[in-house]
Every structure is written in structure tokens, then in C-alpha cells.
Image 1 (cartoon, rainbow, N blue to C red):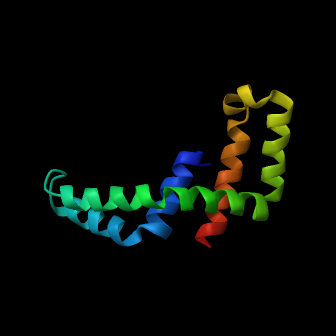
Image 2 (image 1 turned 30 degrees about the horizontal axis):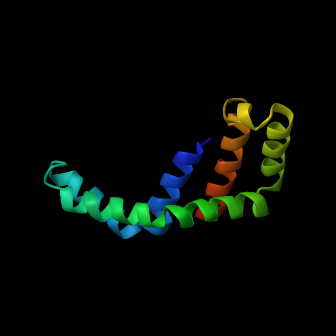
Image 3 (image 1 turned 135 degrees about the vertical axis):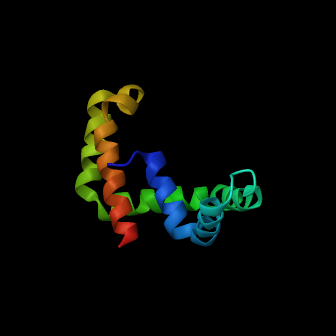
Length: 106
């Protein structure tokens, strides 16, 4: 199951910045990372610009289409408290993010 960060990365690469990701991958397959600096910068700029939309999409899909997983995460946070949720609810969050990524990639 992906973490929130991994889910964001997957959605950025496959839905928001596919063109720049492909260009970077192509470059890296035949050149050094130093030689691919322009492609890296283009991808990083795209990813940075897309991040708010990616986060919003993941949250929307999670709560609208992954209701069982979202309910489990809410229950875990309520049971453990917000301060402890980051560590104690990691599995529930990863399950919800995995569901959201699968729905988005369909």
C-alpha cells in the first residue's frame, strides 16, 4: 500500500505531468542526470504546480469512492487522537491512499 507521498508521486507522474515524466525518463535512459538537468527542472516545476490539485484529487476520491477505507481512517484517528494518528493510523491511511490511486488510475 502506498504512503500519502507515494500516492501523490504516482498521480503526478501518471495523471498530471506524464509528458515531462516521459521526457525525463527518456533522457535518463541514455544520459547522466547532470545532462538531464533541463528535463528534471521541467518535471519538478510541473510536479510543484500540480501538487495542490493532486492532494485535492486524492482526498476527494478517497472520501467519495473509498468509503470503507476512509471510515476506518476516521475511526482510527478518533480512537487514537490526532497527535498519535500519524504513527498509529499509518496502515489505514495507506489502505485509503491505495484505494484512491487505484480509482484514479482506472
